[in-house]
Image 1 (tube, rainbow, N blue to C red):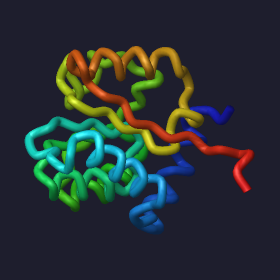
Image 2 (cartoon, helix red, strand yellow):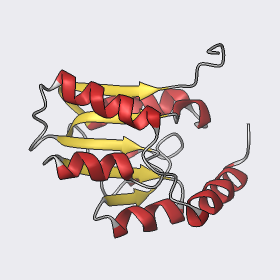
Image 3 (cartoon, rainbow, N blue to C red):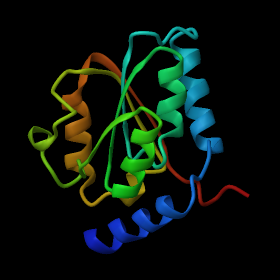
Length: 150
């Protein structure tokens, strides 16, 4: 596992150089959210952890959702803010939710992690923070790589 500083620098460099576009995994999650909520996400509060360049959050925002993101990369936050996405630089796998300025307890209808869980420092703290951030009945959508897929 990489140290926090090495991981942060890799992601800052990645997002500073390129906007990685709307990934296939993000499209899959978007479709799953729209299906679950019958294409009506207007007014829902959505949190994405590890949002990268913010393309999924921007697309959900265009459909009327209130979106918020947390990310460990300064560059990703900068790029996402330019798209009008509210975000904060914080690692919820290390920091308690109380340290966040944008994530509160019982605040979100949906939480999204796209290819993030496998990069976290403390899975248990992250899941605890996600659970605390979701409203009762809130939904978690996440993807992880399938290394056996060919």
